Image (tube, rainbow, N blue to C red):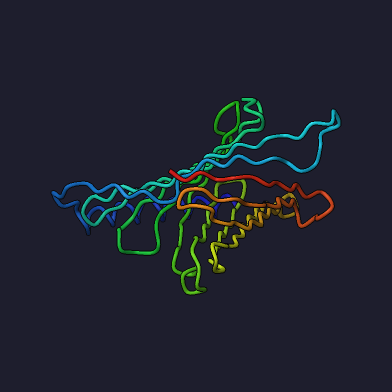
Length: 219
């Protein structure tokens, strides 16, 4: 695994250098593109042992900066329960490459209340989900410890409804693959407000699934 991930890192560095040499940034006005940016607030349907229900707050961020033929993108998922800082989890990803290409280089980080605990390097590809009639992306990234595969796919269903699935798989040499699945159904109420229900499932074990219902405000 270590040799494979080192090869991936060197390939990324070489590709980035080649991209810069082959496509110098032109003196153009930078353009900022905002994707889906929203604050989700949801209630966990299962009560805690104390009889309470946790509230999950999730901030979704998507923005890209285009400078000539070059694009630098950022995607963030940052959340915590009941605004307790020790429950914080963040997954922040940076993409860079040619603006008109569906394949981008990727830096994928994960963090908790103590700081960044995982960084992987890889690529993002966006054309596969478009060919399937939806929206989303496919990420492949790795470091010396593990290989990660992530696919996010969403599709409008009509009458303001849409369905989304996020499938994440982490492969290591020493342990069984770890899977995390999110299934979400959305219903638009206004242009910026929608309701949703989500199931979060670890390792395809439905008995340990977490179910949430809430609202999303897009800004």
